[in-house]
Length: 334
Picture 1 (tube, rainbow, N blue to C red):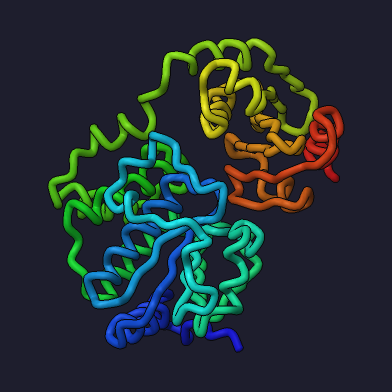
Picture 2: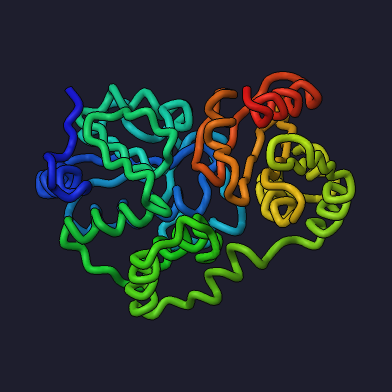
């Protein structure tokens, strides 16, 4: 049976009560973000994990394989305590999924949704189909860390600089440093609370957004140079492609490809930006961004993925031309 919050109750109340009970009983709680976690997923895992640890829970923080973090995230407080998925019990007392839009985004850890005595899902993706026993799913939240901050309040955990650093990283990342349309008045209220703990927000932003190896410039010049503008497709489409192999040629890890779409999306003549990222197994991981006129979550969901109205993605097993052809078809109306 799925437990939803009672009508009129705070969305996080039920989950906070479940987690508080687990902490009081010194239960084993496993927390995981999605595969290849971003700042929102990792910040959520580390902040909630630390909060539960302070309340007395036995906490294990993890994420699905491949078990590697980019340098832009590995510095977050608590990241050194992450354990690979193989090190977590198959039947913990509580399993908490954070920022995963679907069970598939949990990889091998999706089995814990059924294996745990209780599962809690905390997420803000509009495409989330509803899974887990206790759900905190709010598509209006600009980032999952916003929901985690509410949970920490419900647990009676005081925000300090360690927790605030993790939360601010996720908040800044998923709002585009407060530039995206998902930024609300209470987003800035939360940012103010986090800044009041004494965090160095400039240093956090620099490490997240403004630090990259020199090879990134070479990769960017090649990938930007092959970009294609198709103004007649939907409200306008700009797209380009790269691959993990090409990143390696520039001395870069594959995760460096994630930042490409934020450059491509600046194209004035196209509402939708798309970057196709070739993976080692031959598939394409596709990032989609919208300037506002197009719901790219609809496109991604139609092609097996998900996300938000302005930011979404999916994975495609075909070749590059079949991938972009499928995207064009969806943008032209399916």
